[in-house]
Length: 342
Image (cartoon, rainbow, N blue to C red; front, side):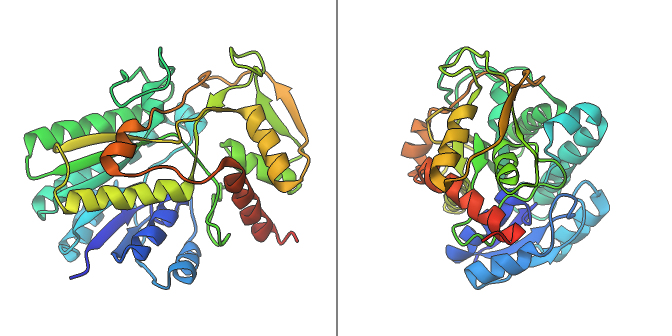
């Protein structure tokens, strides 16, 4: 029997790429998404790339009754990948209660239904935001988590605690938390990619929109950090590489290869790139000159972070493979397709 995977937030950026990889690996997928930050058109693109159309239901998983009804009708789900969450750092500072309700209650509802309907396995979309500004780099899975810089970051930290405590209390549950660094790029077909609603919160969509003429100029927040060129450093990972790690994590749980009921893995490249290096890398990969300006630092931004990926590489047998220039070019190809730029 083909295994059935529920992907929450599956029409979103990372979710849609993961659905494609799940299809490529032979799984059946059902998506739940409230479309608050994505479009149902993504389903057509997933089908065009993979040759399979996922089932789809639209509702918010923070709605307890609707979530229970869904699981009651889909008791044959074998595992869950939970992406669905509100995710803008700035907005979370302005609307903390919305973020706590949406991001915490949705996970609690899912876990309660897992217990009720006997679904053991969940992979959780976490984030390197749980590390804050670490004292030592690169960060390993044992690096102490810091107080979050935003309500969004705190929801990731609290959700990890909810998973940890639930697995401890209910041995029938198994969970893997994947701590992403900075996902960028798009599918090589340019049929799916990052589609922020409104002004982009992330660097690469802002770069591609500036290159496309949607934004007048790119703001680089700060050139006075303690880094080689003064701009902040992050670990940028190709979204397809990231998606493939989810398929490996699901297989690990379904085949009971996990070493503990709750496991955590860093997903990054192990390399730190500065904002200005990304700008120059984009210009080199695409031949497009960017209009950018240096502006003061942005509140809540950390100076530098990148991953030690040894544990994920060795334990999952997974490694980020795509080069930075190829990844930045894929983001530009996606933007060009969106805007009908030749």
